Image (cartoon, rainbow, N blue to C red; front, side, top):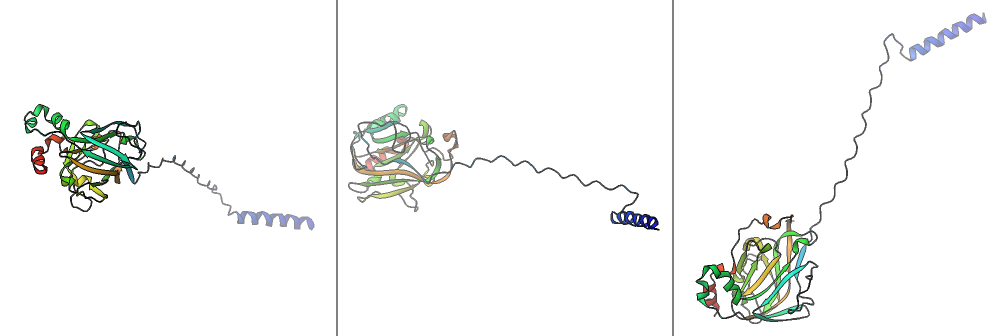
Length: 263
C-alpha cells in the first residue's frame, strides 16, 4: 500500500513540474543576445578661450632711445619708430612732440617715390609687435587709445596707419575715424579713451604693425592702447583672413589738402 502511495506521489510531483514549466513538445526559445555598449568617444579638447582685450602698449618702463626685446604685453617687439619727434615717458605716459620736416608739394609729383618721401618728413611713432603669438588672440571690434593733446584738435594732424605683415595698408586721418558711439575721433586737452570702431573705420580687427604719424607739429600724450571686443579667433595665416579692403599708404591720402588745412 505504501509503495503505491509513493509511486502516486512521485507521478503528481512530475506532473506539477511539467505544468509549472509550461512544458510542450516545442523547443524553448533562446534569449535574444544583448548588444555591447558603444565605446565612449574620446574627449575633445576645449577650444582656446579668447581674452577680452589685448594690450598693444602702455608705455610702462619705455625708453624712446632703446627698443626692448619684448613689448609690455609679453610678445616680441621687432622694431619701434620715434622719428621726426621728441619724446619722453613718465609714469607710463608718453609725451610726444611731433616735429615733421618741411613739406614740399613737389615731393608728391614723383609717384615712384611717393610713399618714401611722405614717410621721410612725417612725424612717426610706431611699433611692430608679434601680436599673433599672444594666447587666445582674436580679431576685435575696437581699438582704444587713451590720449590727450596739448592744445586739443590734434585729430586733424594725426594719421592712424596699420600694415599687418608689411602687407595691405590701412591709413586714415584721426578726424575721419569712426568711434564706438558712431561719431568721429576728437582729441581734447583732457586724457580720454578714444574707442575706434575698426570695421566702421575701414581697418582690420588686429595688426602686428601700427604707426601714428603727424602731418604738422603737435604735442600729444599717450597712456595706453589696446584692442577689445573679440569677434573671432585668428588662424595661422592672419593676413589671408582680412576681409576689409586696403585703404592705401599714408601718401595715398590727400596729403597736400590736409597739410594746407592745418598750416
